[in-house]
Image (tube, rainbow, N blue to C red; front, top):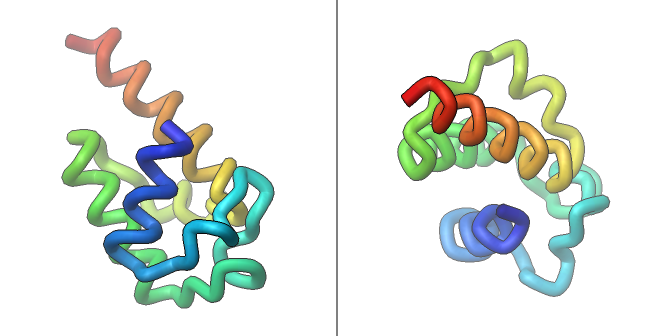
Length: 81
C-alpha cells in the first residue's frame, strides 16, 4: 500500500519520490497544501472504491497515516463484500 500511495503522490501531486517515507509529514516535509490534500483524498477514494470522511482527513499528518487508513478501509471494504 505504501508503494501505491507513494506512486500517487509522485504522479498526481509531483512530490519528489526521494522525500516520501512513511514518517514524512504531508504538509511540513512534502509541502502538500489543503487543496492538494483534498485532491489526494479524491484520488484515493476513486482508486480504492472507498469514501473518506472529512473528519478522518484531519488525522492524515504523515504518509504512514494515509497508508494505515487505506489499509484499514480497504480491508473493511473487502470484508463487507
